Image (tube, rainbow, N blue to C red):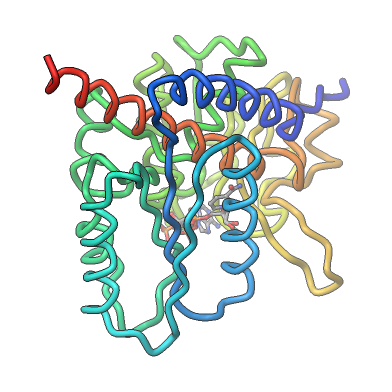
Length: 290
Ligand code: NDP
C-alpha cells in the first residue's frame, strides 16, 4: 500500500479563501477583523513565523499589526502592551509569539490576554471551555488537524486515536478534540512504556514530539491515518517531521508530509479564529444596539 498524501498546503489555500469571503461579508458592516502579534526579542525562527502570520492576514483581508519589543523589555511593559490591545476595538485577536525571553513568565502573560481575544486558545479559560466541550477558540494546530481529517472524510467516531506528545499547545488539546468527535483516545508522553504497542493500535495516529523520525514504519498500523505535527530542522538543513515518512507511507492509508502538511493549516486556522472573534464581537455590538 502507498499512502495518500494529505496536502495541507492545498487545504490551507481553501480555508484561506473561505476566510477571505467571510471577511468581505463582515466589511459590509464596516468591520475588518484585526490580529495583533507581539514579538519580544530577536529569535530568528519567531521572526519568520510572525512575518508569515502577518502576510497571511493581509492576503485574506484582515488587519495585521505586528508589535516588536526588544529582548530587554520588562514583563510589566509587555503586560501593559497586552492591556492596550485588550481595550483596542480594532483588534479582535492577540497572539504573543512564544517562546518568551527567560525573564518573563509565559503563563502570566497568556492569562493577561482577554479570553475573547485569545486566538491561540492557550488562556486557562479557553483550555477549560475546550475540556468541558464548549470551546470558544480551538488551539490552531489541533484545530487544523481536525479540519484535515474532516476533509479526508476520516471516520473519527469510534476510531482508536493515539496522540504521541502531550503538550498544552498540541497534544492535550488534540486529544480533547478527538475525544469530543467520538474517538477512543490514548495520549502518550516520554514516559509511555512500549510506545510501539500503543501506536500500532491507532486508526488515527497524531505525532507531536519534536523528535525527528521517532515513529518508524513498523510502529504504524496498516491502513492508519498518520498526522505528523513535528517540524525539525536537521543539521544538513532539511526540514523533517517526527515520523519516518518514507517507511510510514508504505503502511498507512493516508499521511501528512513535512513540510506542506500540518504547518500551513496552523496559520490558516489562526485566521479562522481571528475572523470568528470579529464575528462574535460584531454580534455583541449588534445585540447591544437593539
Ligand atoms: P513540547 O516539547 O512542548 O512537547 C513534546 C511532547 O512530546 C511532550 O509531551 C513529551 O513528553 C513528548 N515526547 C517527547 N519525546 C517523546 C518520546 N520519545 N515518546 C513519547 N513522547 C515523547 O513540543 P510541542 O508540542 O510544542 O511541539 C511538538 C512538535 O510539533 C515540535 O516539533 C514542534 O516544532 C511541532 N509543532 C508544529 C506545529 C505546526 O504548525 N506544524 C505547531 C506547534 C508545534 P513529556 O510530556 O513526558 O515531556
